[in-house]
Length: 137
Figure 1 (cartoon, helix red, strand yellow):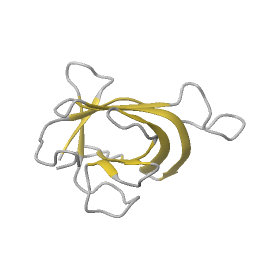
Figure 2 (tube, helix red, strand yellow):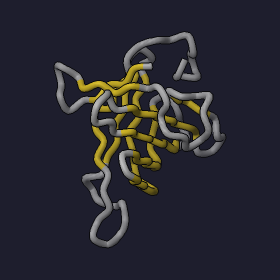
Figure 3 (spheres, rainbow, N blue to C red):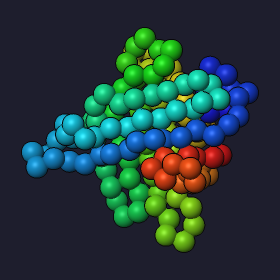
């Protein structure tokens, strides 16, 4: 499973907020930049504290930053990779790991290279909360 503390868990995870853009000063320091994720089956949540870099190439994007994860005392890094498909569902990969130990906490594509694009994690928009994106694998 994606949640390394309990790999046998299965369920839907959701990204409730993903806002990232460079400011006029060329940094990602805007107060509006935020990433929030939850995996309710595990009682796991993650909130960004800062964005480190954003790369957009064609229909693919990668965002890396730092934040805090429930149940983890150390700060964590996160990487979100998105493939925007115009004719099929978008694909999203999320990897969260401990900044101090390097231990992966969550990775919905755990057998892939560190910053690889998503292969099979399909994103769907929530019917009850249109601003929430869930992804299934």
